[in-house]
Length: 472
Image (cartoon, rainbow, N blue to C red; front, side, top):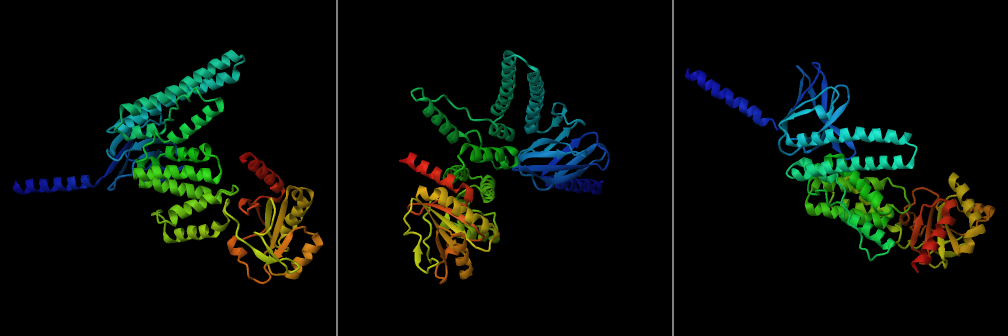
């Protein structure tokens, strides 16, 4: 008797030990065939990553593991490749879901998870309102009178407002939940009326500045779990690319403001994602002068030792690139060049007197250059010369005789120079990887624009002149 009792104690301890090792347990009950495969995946930015796999048996599938899942919005992908979303909070990762075949959130039953009860309650309401909105849009297409269209627009607006209000009500009533943080992050900031003593233009400016300053008010920037929702990525993208004008200094200011907020809240995963996304986005951005943003991100985070997730190879790549593009960022003075022209007379870029200077790097054996440089010569004669523009054209290779022959044959009306004596570091200073390459400098040899297509140079200088006039 004693031995049996002792065995039961040992067995209970063993079972307890096994259960204690399970950090998450999510059971899906549905119409499943034995062996059906279900996948649990999480959002990360605008992508999804598989985290676990479960195989059905007796109409059930179980996701479980010994290490807790990172909190966020997850997808349960069913055997038919359709899916539904659930929340996984930091705590309470043990719950069950009864799931109908159509995955209708109105009919999903939750046991053991307040977060998912709230999440699916909102999902069911939003789905119901969505059906009404679709009916209204269909009616709008058939509407004939303006009165009828106006009424339908108002109905549609009321539906959108009801969804927003439902989300806000659930969030405020359950502030302790992860669901509340997700709902609040989806809520736009409420903008008060601008001061009445301002004119229309000043009121617009006031409203814009308020929205920009308070854009993140409803987002808990201390909650790393938001990085595993589609919400944070979408808000970040809108904030940087829609609220801020797409000019380097403006984008840098917006990025800096957000990253500093996240850093203050000590959310390492949000910090990681924001820095990574901003760097990656503007590494691929080809907008004129936007490499200034990439240089800022590389210098301020990767090269400053703040990108703790990046390996040494990645850091070295960004630092090398920042070093290469640093001398020719827009709004910096262009590096001096002192090279002989075709008559072996030294020509200084900085000593050149002109309202604007076009710096052209080219090679007479480069196919694209053969088309673009003569085209620039034609534009110069027709219009650029009259704008007070001069062209400082740098031959980048070593066939001096071939270069001089091309200059003469094409009658290039530029200050044509070449590094005959090998004394100038133009290739390193200007990061010359390919040709042709064109930069536009002002009278102080400040780089205003670069990589401008030849047929846009006249228009670009006209824009710069207008901008200069307005600033004065």
